[in-house]
Image 1 (tube, rainbow, N blue to C red):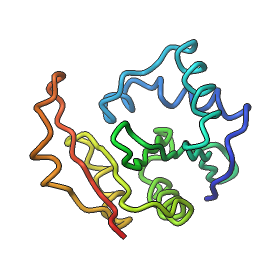
Image 2: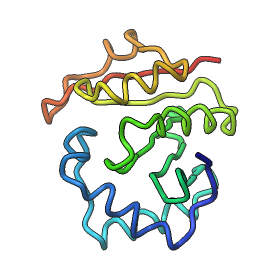
Image 3: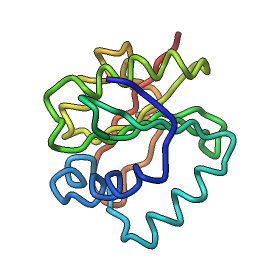
Image 4: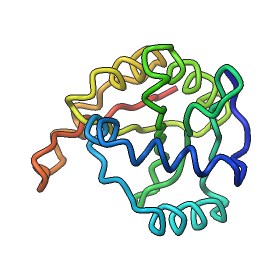
Length: 153
C-alpha cells in the first residue's frame, strides 16, 4: 500500500467509490453526480490548504485520503476506500502513513456513529473521541449521529 499524488486517471475510480450506494450509506454521505463530483475535485485540487492523496493497494487505486481546514480553522482528515478493499487494512495503513505526512495537530475526523469500521480505523491510528466537542454539537437535522475523533499529538 502506498500514497501518491492524485492523477487525472484516478478520478473515474474515485467517482465510482463515492457513487456506491452501500458505501455512501455507511459513510452517511450523499453521493455526487458526475458533474458535481468533477466540479468539487477541480476546486479542491487547486486549493493549497488541501492535502490529497490516492491510495494504491496491490497496484490499483483503492481509494483516496485528504486533509483540509474547516471554517473554524480546524484541520480535518477524511478517506474513502472502495468497497472491494474493505476489511484488508487498507484504510488503517493509509491513515497511519497520511498522519505522518500532515504534521498539523490537533487533527479531527468526523464519522457516522453506525460506521464501526471507520471508528476502528481511527482508534487504531491513535484518534480518540472528543466527547466534549460532541456535547456542544447540535442534534443533526438528518438524524444521523456523527462522532468526532481527534488526534492530539
